[in-house]
Image 1 (cartoon, rainbow, N blue to C red):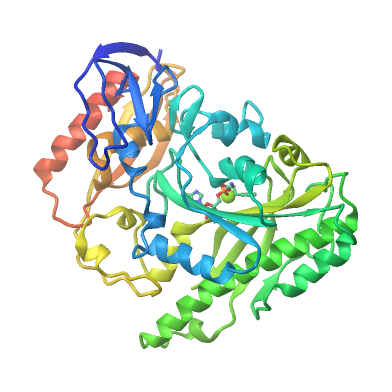
Image 2 (image 1 turned 180 degrees about the vertical axis):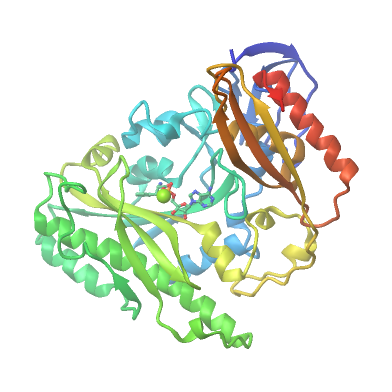
Length: 461
Ligand code: FA5
Ligand code: MG
């Protein structure tokens, strides 16, 4: 009922950013209030849309921005900083992978179970049933393991998730994936890895790691094909590499802050990080690293020892073993550059872009702070039905775009008599570069209400 699919006539949609992205159609598919063309052309490929399609054109536009390849953008500056520090350590850098991938690349080949939430249409942007916008850089592990000629690789790319909206979450963000392999056939493997660990430059960060010595357990098991000692060595190499990388980035930030005259106390304290256990379908054991920064633990990277099946899927031999990690770049860049809102990365305003230059970590100077306009929206759903928060976000975004500062579910309950569910959301509309008028927001807001009524059969309270 809610996921009703119908065919309707629609206009030709002209993309804003690139000739590579052509969205042209005669007929179109409408679902949940969004209209999709018959075909979507993305980066030179044409896809037939179907009942899985849920990627709006404003998200497709973002795929052409390639912020990580812009040397003067904070995301590009951060990528460059990491690459400079990893040069000569045996890694190939990949920065050109396009965001349209298959469900096979993004999920299947990595061993995601069929019922994993990540696969759902409320979490992921599908181009059609078999193709989607990658939700993580791990979608390219398969091809990199096949092709890479060096012991390791580093991939940087934009990734897409239908996520909540707030200061630190945006439906498009950036990740950097690293991986490193060894072969059991190459002489004394233990000695070789131990030597490789020695070669990683030392840092003086404070590390909290309850799992450094006993790196696997029943909850976070090792794989049978590796010896205890191999697991120990490979995970130490992984962790020291990530620690080194994080250290270089935060040291660069400190240096810039000091140069700019800052005397904040954190600038003289050693950097502190901790490792916590995690789960990813394609690694075992797995961990996340958190960084202590200005009084808070910041989750920044998932990692683990690559499951042998993933390596075998890539055509590698049974002798191979190694690690992989995936770091989120946006939140780290927000901290480094003092950027208060993740949406600013996508700003086309020169007052933003002119502030940054390659090789420099400068502190963002806000050029304006325009007040937000809050609106609440409450509705009853048909009996027995509930609505995913992400669907509400998507409707708001389809009308308000980047004027959507946040959408928060503030209340829900079931009426004891009617059995109907009530959901209430607080919307904050705010612009990065201008004042919003009440008249404008009232109009946007009523369109949001109309669509919620039309597509989800809700009764506004
Ligand atoms: C992953 O995406 C895994 N692919 C990481 C990985 C790679 C694990 C290789 C093992 C081996 P996760 O969903 O936790 O994991 O995301 C990784 C990082 O991306 C997070 O730590 C966070 O820094 C960042 N991130 C996740 N969601 C968002 C978001 N909506 N906005 C900004 N950053 C995000
Ligand atoms: Mg995570």
